Amino acid sequence: MSRIKAKLFDIVRLKDGREGTIVEVYDEPPGFEVEISGAVPDLVTVKYDEVVEVIWAAP
Image (tube, rainbow, N blue to C red; front, side, top):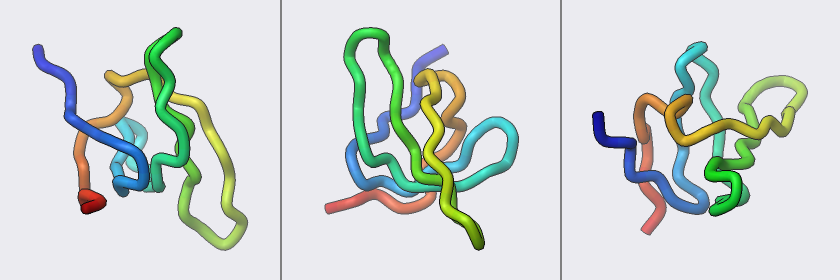
């Protein structure tokens, strides 16, 4: 299975249904820091395979 091509500032949907903006991309270990949307923003670190969809791609 190929991984989703996501990059800095893309808005993504995670496997658990949450949506957020990628604010950091990590190579080692591979993953993303995602700011989760909501009344109280939250930062989470996720692996590449936890991103299921790019909702909006940054230019």
